[in-house]
Length: 363
Image (cartoon, rainbow, N blue to C red; front, side, top):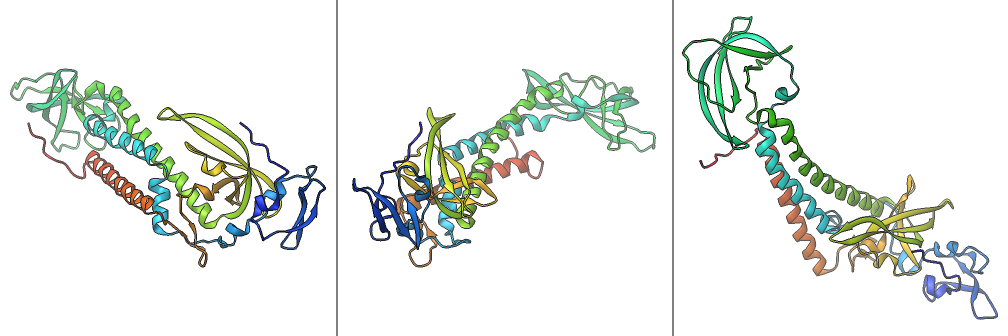
């Protein structure tokens, strides 16, 4: 839905009482022009009221210093960990639980089984054939050790897997295969595989989608938070008028994510539009014009002052942005702890997947 600017607003409605000098008053009692910092602004209905909306609000703008501004560590943590807690936790859960399946299945896959080009490479001698203590589609897998002697004459021991136990037939040679252009001793017996999963390896790769999607949600949330933090710290400040409020087409917990479009004027006089989205946009649309920060290099990127937690804002003296609400502080500390916990779990899973550490499983 579109929101139309009301040209009949008085200077007091826009700027606050006592900081604006009325220059001209119409017969109907509506202010037609004002003086602000020695500049005259027309409020006539035939003029563009957007210019008025962009003038500084003395009650708020005096507190906001020139960039770079100081943002407290707690407010920084809130923007990263507690601004969209539901989406962030959902992403972490998806990523961490997905990595459990990745460690269980993808870790048993060898890409050479799926994409490698194998060729006959002479014969090998079976050393042992043991239960691999794993089933694939109710088929018990076996681990086979064998020795092979390449052209350089040095005998090496290799391992492969299959769904059947190989009988020990003494020193009887068996056919062996090798990868083309191999330099790492990649050998396997005929009808076996390097990985435990065997031919199911490629099919099992779909489990990678779960941690990728979850990690994508987490990274996207952090990227948005980083951009908003940079806008708050380094962005230019102005005021914008709500031009449009519409659903993005995305739902979270059956609730529409809304997109709000603002029109504002930059310091060099350009008229631009930027947008902000979220589940609850009531705070950033409750005034006729909103204080916002924009990036001169990317003017479409904006951050609304009202997007900060309730009670947060710049100090009167220093202009530093602080987190003041006790309830918000508790939520911030809790979400920061949860985020660090999930991060530690995910890194531990990655370490296990790449073989940096292992743990014994009870048989």
